[in-house]
View 1 (cartoon, rainbow, N blue to C red):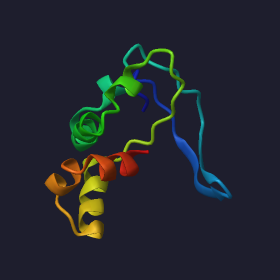
View 2 (view 1 turned 90 degrees about the horizontal axis):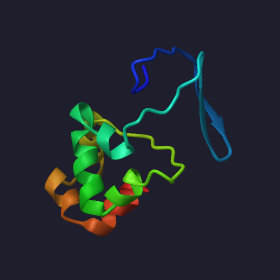
View 3 (view 1 turned 60 degrees about the horizontal axis):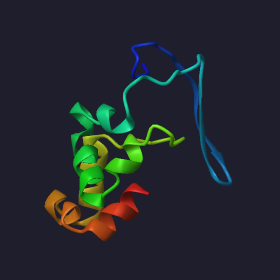
Length: 103
């Protein structure tokens, strides 16, 4: 489901390419009137905190920007904390590392 409430289904996932991964869906997704920053709520609360700490809020609120965001859930961040052997606070207190993770 996209942010506007429209539904689409994944048809094929994890198609590796030389410069990324392709996931195929069965419908078009249309932008909402919300900014990317507005959508970073609920299960994306750590992402929202990280965006603020990294100083990227303005970029995500820029209505003229043409961005694609792959938004890690809180569970994905928790896995990152384990993999990097750091805490959430360790990551959020290191602006340089936070920008590397997000970009």
